[in-house]
Amino acid sequence: MKTINNLLASLVLAVWVSAIAILSVQNATSVSLKFLVFQSIQMPVGVVLGFSASAGVIGGTLAPILWRLSGYQLGNPQSEDMGEDDDEDF
Image (cartoon, rainbow, N blue to C red; front, top):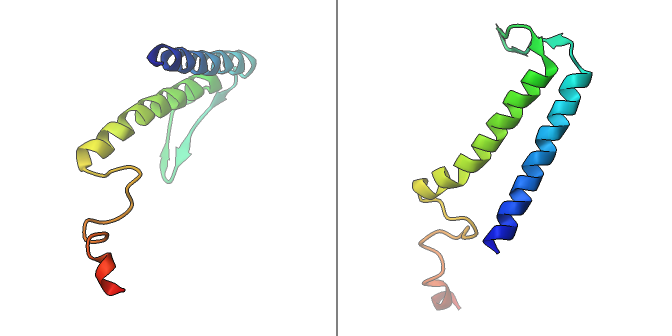
């Protein structure tokens, strides 16, 4: 099962890298990113897409690890106080 998951993850990543390569070849014009008062240097669209995709992959990889370290449990929205004394109210 782990082999299939690795294969699917590699396939998705390969498709994204191919799409970025195609877009960067077709859009060679330079762009500049602006956020509030900050502005980046002029760079091709493909470079911006590549950095964005890399940041997304790294963020998606690190997010579950950071959630686990912070003690947040996925799939368990109830607090610790709830659940034990609920039967006494009836």
